[in-house]
Length: 548
Image (cartoon, rainbow, N blue to C red; front, side):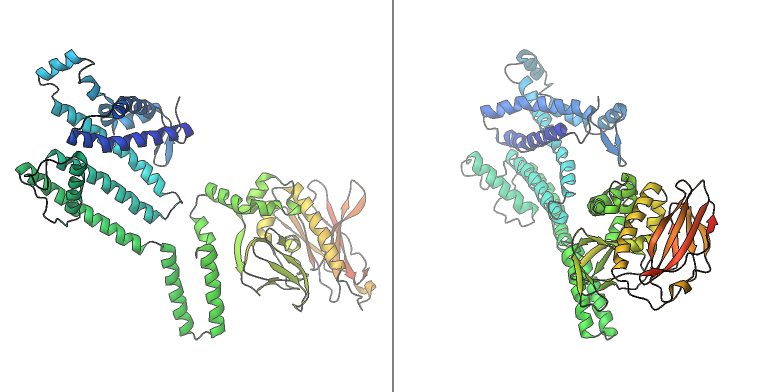
């Protein structure tokens, strides 16, 4: 049995282990330096140390590890990795030396060992100090926490540096206590609390290179110890100052990069003498980018991710929007994933026309944030207002037809676009969905066109379709013909052998072409076309045939 490193119970155990390790890193050196009577509750914890440390050793042999980004589950590999790293330290830290070599357990054996100088109190103290080294267990925790998004990573890094420095300062202070570096040796030895505070005071003034000189070493061991601490202090001081400078310089790297971009933009606008009102519009646009996106480009950010993570992020951002579109109701999960992965972000400022009536459309839009207005050609009449989660332009996605209305951004709008080429490629893999989508879009466009039909002066009998031809492309059949000026639109039918009747392929085309996304594979495809002339229709064209 192998325990996953992400196991919830293992995480709680690691949290308990970290607390016990931190307590040991603080209490063990303090007790060895001050030699104060051990309280009863600490004696209980001393018994608890070997238990939890031994449990950690056993658990480590059965916990997965990560090597080169891959989770390793082989027990042999896990054991070899652990034996070559911190196993000896953990093993020594788990041995209850203070219990074995004190009056009580194995007292006769321990006395004999002491008489042979095998285990003197000095050696036992050195072995107990090994528990301090288990503080290395804190480092992976600090590293993982620094990658979380709770706080600014730079601030977390500085906080962890200060924490490590304080632990080291505690150890140095305990060393000073052991060497009896005191303020004044002529006065009686103060109580333990005062002694520790004075030792910590001497430590901080030494490692910060302040050194007031009120506490000075007297003996050779004290001087040598002070020299080592001073060297460590110089390195630690430089390291902290360097980290602080780096933190201040990169406290908000995104803002720094954004300001640099704005400075370049400002220089460009002044050099090119861009009008002031246009400059204000550009600055307003970039202010919106900063306030809502922190100046980042979503496409660039996602481009750095592997395909699997990119898909998961895209689904999180856009799956709900896609599922609101009626023509995608009940669509296979794979189709939704393909659609979501191919959405492209777009941003429009207030007053921008996303498209205008009469333009040839080939994109569908999804509103992630903001509001758009469906307006008349004059821009004054507002037919409808769409907001977050809505969509528009789906008719053009299927037929590349002219836009039947204009769409204008009422405020800053974050949209996602889906182009016809990508959509057609996706639908080729799902013919059943393609037929459903085409039918629903056709019904919506019929209603839109019928609302805007006017009486045409063109003679319906003269609106005869000529030049009808067929082209094949990637399993689709494309029909094209010569357009007729003045007509309202076109209708296309295909012959159904099973029902022995003509069925509409498209009732309201605005352009002189039509795509059959789901042609017959085993039968001959037969088509005919006629023009829509106001409220009436022109004659049907001659039938044209195609086989796949």
